[in-house]
Image (cartoon, rainbow, N blue to C red):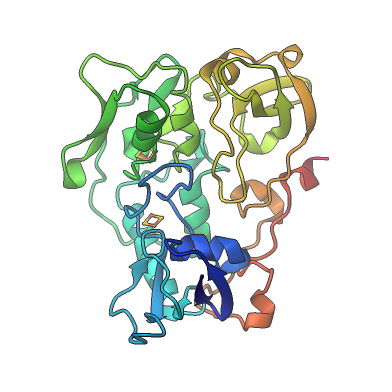
Length: 334
Ligand code: SF4
Ligand code: FES
C-alpha cells in the first residue's frame, strides 16, 4: 500500500491509484473537480486540466516537489507523496484560469440551454471562475445538428472532453463518431452519412459535462429545477432498468441514468428506457433521489464562497464544502 497526503489528510491506497481517485476515497471538499475524467470510462481524463493539483513532495524516496502543477486524474500516487489542492493558492488561481480558458469559446447561453442547472461547467465557473470575462474576440460557432434520432449536438458548447467518444466506443461495438481536426477548429462529428443509433447511444448525453449533447425528447419541455428526480425501475432485457425519472406532478419529463456524487452515472441505461418509456405506468417509482453535489440546481440554497482564494483552516474544511453548504434538491421541493 502507498501512503499519500492530500490537503493534510493521509490515506493508504493501492499501487496504480491516481491522486484524484485517492482524493475521492478521502472525500469532501478536497476532491478536485473533473470535467473530462469519468471513472467508468477507460483512458478518460487528461484533457481539461480542471483537476490540476500541486505535488509538494514527490515521494518519501525523492521528496522534491514536482516543478509544475499536475493533472490529478492522470498522476499515480507515490509512497510518501504530499499533494495540495484547496490548500494551495497557486492551484486555486490556476483553476480560475482554466475556467476562463474553457469559457473562451463556450457561449454564455445558460438561460436557453437545456443543461442549465446541471451543467458541470456552469457549476465549475460559479465555484472557481471570475465574474467577468476578458475575452473580446468572436467565439467560434457551428450549426446545431442531429447526430441520431434522439440526440442533438450543439458544438458551440462542446469542451472537447472526449467523454462521449469513449462512451460510444466502449459501450458499443461500432465506432461511428469522434473528434475531427485539431486545435480551435476541432469538432465532434459522426462519420460521413452515419448517425449514432445503437441501443446505448443515449448515454453520451449523460456523460457530456455541458449542454453540447441534449435529449431531443426533453428539449425545452421543462427546466430541471422544476423537476423532481426519482429512483425508478422496470424490468428491461437490455440494461438494469434502474434509472432516474425526472417528474413534475404525475408526469415523467425525462429519463436519465442514476448519477453519483461526482455526476457520473452508476450504470449506463439503454435507449428504450431513456427515450421510449415516459409513462408513469412503465415504471416502479421507488424513492426521491438525494442529489448532494454542489450545483446551481440548489436554487435559492446555493451559496458562493466570496473569495475562493481564501484558504480555510483545515478544521473548517473537514466535511464542509469551501463553496458553502448545498442542499438536496429534494429539500426545496418537498
Ligand atoms: S460533446 Fe460533450 S461529451 Fe462530447 S466531447 Fe463535447 S463536451 Fe465532451
Ligand atoms: S479531469 Fe483531469 S484533466 Fe480533465
